[in-house]
Image (cartoon, rainbow, N blue to C red; front, side, top):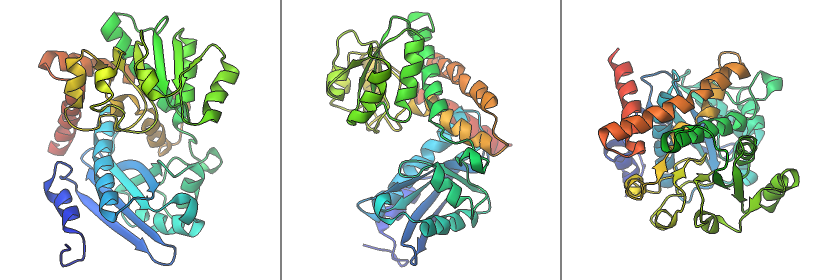
Length: 363
């Protein structure tokens, strides 16, 4: 069923009435000449212009694409708030398989749509888009970040994303074991791609025992060629069941924490780079009931957005790293708030972020 505009009714209901609602603006973009179909969602701009990446993905339906844009942009509001950035939450999705339809002309058309928002939304890389793509988008839109160093950008943000996750792990160790070191701890990393392989380097340097798994053999080989002391595990299911595991780091796809995986986790801490690790509401309570300390993903993986935000002011790596180091303190603050309020850390993180956004809206 559609409304008078031809938009699916379920999409409009999601926008105005569901838990994903509360968004300020959703823009539907189409350029027939290039085949571009995109959705730009702005969730909350109380703290500043919405900042978030552009996901290029072959969604099964347009409704699924809109729902993803709404969910992701809401998550960026919370991530940016807890990262201490003067940015709200925004996200965009381009519908289609990038390997089939991505062209320079399509990216330029997309850049024109972002530019038409006059700076309310700042875009960057996400799944299916890369630094080179942002260089193209920037030719039509000055509100583009995540560009190459040759074009005045900060380049690959995975370095600081991994560094921030490492800070979250250190805070988890401090909270649970009274010492912010991973020395002697057994850490399992699921997914050793762009972010995961940097995280492994931090863990080894800190003296951790590291186990890894990845569906891509070349990613595993890149680690083991440099570090033969790392243990390779067959798959994620085997990894999460490994006896004696102290920390589990999901660094691949979302939804890693669900009704099947949480009951068999052996780790005492979950702290990883993957977005949207909780498969559905209530999983955070299941983790708490099993005494598994969960470091909220959108808190610890904020190093990347810190980096791309800094690019807007003239990128300085040392300044970014100093800000990403504060993820350690923010994570500890969340654990303390969770304990004081008797709630899971994910709920505590939400409360702190919502408080910052409400205070900004009230100014």
